[in-house]
Image 1 (cartoon, one colour):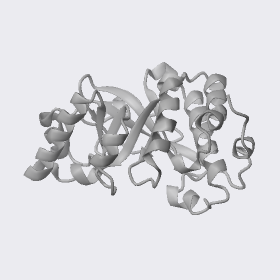
Image 2 (cartoon, helix red, strand yellow):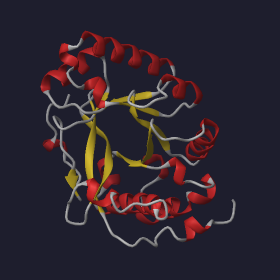
Image 3 (tube, helix red, strand yellow):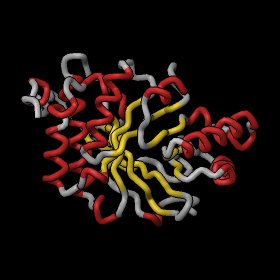
Length: 251
């Protein structure tokens, strides 16, 4: 494995602290909690903007490293493994210099906190400006190490299907713009139906994000969606994992 880079050594050298909220992703096929997405928050529960406003080009790498470690540490402390669910963590591909070197802190946290690699999902946004070859190299290493990978906000960025032609993740997270009002939009229904079919042919799971109403959930269920996430089901909970009893509209 390559020598640890400066960014890896400085992964804990961040001038500000933050915490996490967790939002469940629900499997409609059996009503279980498939995963919890870790979402950055201030130490007193302030919104993500209060933290992200402090991120600069100079501390981007340290922030990305600390986000991974913080999410794993807190989820482990909250009993993620006992729930049977996975942990989904946002990451920044442009903050990765060399995949095998830059994953060391994450692997160390995973072992220390008892959260196995196969319980971790790393998601990046479609809008990330990064070369497809470099992105493929990162995802290949991650999946070799046992992690799952996901494209977040799919359908909202500039690359769309061309990105999917070059990069095949474990999971696609359909952007909320395709879900919002889907119960009354034939065009959205057609797009999501075909995306579900395409993903199925590619052996890629699909998570429909941004479910905010019972009508949207009913329509997604009718279309055959398996995994869903959104405020209608459960809002992000600060430093806490939602219990099955707190999830609305399961199954």
